[in-house]
Picture 1: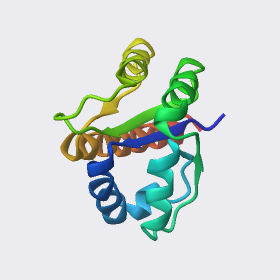
Picture 2: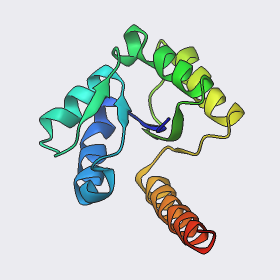
Picture 3: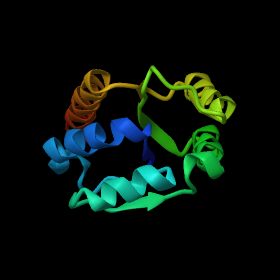
Length: 137
């Protein structure tokens, strides 16, 4: 099973997520991406050359759906660009998502700098796995 990359962004962070992904479009291309509804819609309008699966909007159960994917071991890494200044009325669902990422040891980036480091780490991990596979074949 190919694991997914979870994508979520608070409303005023959505443009940053689009720019972040545009700058790394080659890396994201061909990966299995899943986003909450409004984040996914925003990414699709951002003219990225990627495909993704859209869940429900976060405030309508999207965080709960994303949390279930993490709980089922279907998510490899998560990008959740958060606005530290807002608290949403469904903050419990947000906290559940973050808690489940921690429980399942899923790397979670909450800003562009940590997202960049996650990608670098994953690239290095993938390169090491390929090198190890070549040595053992």
